[in-house]
Length: 244
Image (cartoon, rainbow, N blue to C red; front, top):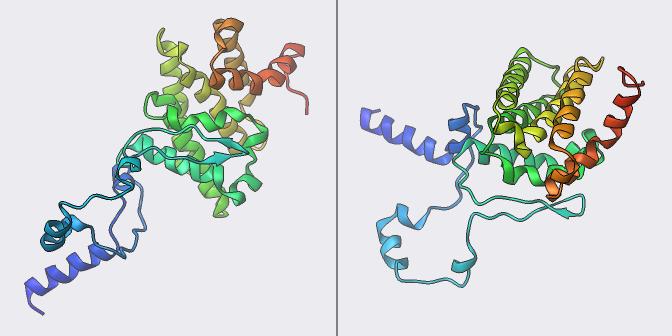
């Protein structure tokens, strides 16, 4: 086979199973996807033929997604899927909607604030890292794997980024920073069967909530986070250890 034919065959294979741009940017191995159609702009003849046509759904086509979780609409975002934040948001929405995932990890019992998280990604490194870590844990558990070194390294990186946000006088006032602290509580429980340092993370969230004061929690996202932590805060006031 000639060199030109080899290159053409390799190009055709890439077109048949191209990689997802978001996966490539995130450094994740992408299984690829099959292409059943060609876009109009890939063929000059079709592009010229359809260039002056207008379709009924033109005004409605945008990047705003709509979805529901636990009977409530998930608050989504207006961003392209070629960013890591959008990739994490799409992955997290999948876990919120997937019945198998919710059977194994019923996040609805942990708080209703999860539906706001997709729209909050891409603005706070601690929250982005925490959600990425949580999704990685979900993937491993659903595939029957034990906690790996890579997950532990990602978790430690998330803790460092949370500490960096907390040490910043501006970032520690962000709702996303509190959310990251709560997310890492869940990661700690999923990684360590003996609670690990979960109580320390709860204490940190409690101090952050106390620093804000009750008047701060007026936004639905912030209010729902406060409601999710109410029972833990009361329990921590009773003693240094959370009862079994």
